[in-house]
Image (cartoon, rainbow, N blue to C red; front, side, top):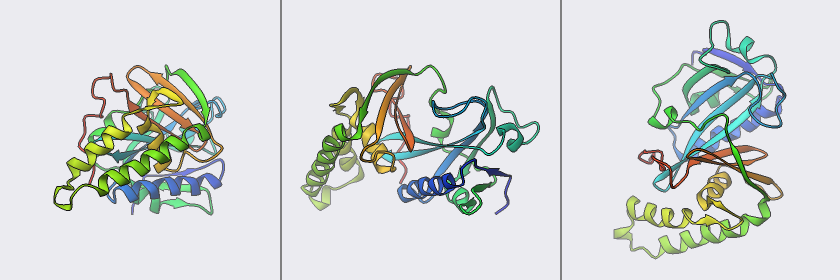
Amino acid sequence: MISTARLVLADPREAADLGAFLGRLLRFDRAAAVRLQTLAGEVGADQEAGAGVLAVYGRLPLGSTGVLALRTARLASDAKAQAGAGAVIGTGVLLDLTLSAGQLLEGVDEERGALAVPPPVTGPAWAGLLPPRGGWQPLGVIGAERVLPQLLAAVGEFKERTAQVPEQHRTRAVLDGIADEIWSRPLTALPALPLRAAHAAYRIGFLQPGARLSAHRAGGWLRLTAPHGTVALRAADAPGAGLGLTPLG
């Protein structure tokens, strides 16, 4: 694998977290792609102004609607220095590539807290439609304990209902229809969000017991943020709410 860049993280432990995130994406789809950006300035409230930040986006094909997952990590030095001279893509964005998740995982060096960035690939359609970086309005903050009971009950309902479908009728479309009906329900503790957001955060490892969760909206986008990462999806009343995409196999 030929690397196009090497990025060093401020906290070496975040390399293992990033590797775990990529591994979960690959369990959904062995050919998963991610979009990687290095950013100048802050991405979240816990980031220092002006610090270099790495952002990695992936897509979770849950039901017929995709949900985007975002994992960030602080870079050890200024993002511009790590991206290299002349690498500026746009305001605040210094490096912007669509990559193979598997190849990026191979480049994660947990011992040194770094990652080798592989050559870019032709990206899937979702990679061109990311949520905005700013303009988010708060919808509320809750604890994970107020979400998990409803979430786990819905998981149980999905398993029970799909088990009742005769084998000859258990097609992807039928299973997606059941999933969409369940996960489009409002989250009781935060009705502005669909249950799908909590489900995605749970499946990717962001929603853990004791976590504080914050919800936001910007235009047609919704997001749910936990200490270990963020999931974002189009609101049901927004154009292209399902990201306009066919689920990955």
